[in-house]
Image (cartoon, rainbow, N blue to C red; front, top):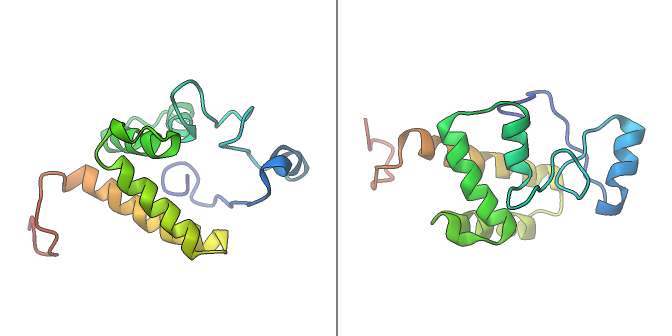
Length: 132
């Protein structure tokens, strides 16, 4: 969201049962809960909804959507990276009690996936000079 839709986006973390009420009170946009415009539809997840509703057609984002969808919906067979993203996400959740701190670390992780999808998929050497 912050990288491709709204760089000034602010994230509110509230109990799932309070999301719609808080959204109404604050003007926030709810997502990833039943009934939200940015939610799951069929086999698609909220990441897919953000791409679709904002016309984001970048091929790397579309590939990332498959990875996120698999991790988010438990269908880790969609791409080899789904299980890794799921493990990383659960690990971040275990490490950080502060949702905003977890978000900052998660953004680095998603940026790395995006960079890999854009320009490093064929590389096997993770050293900084690989591919230069």
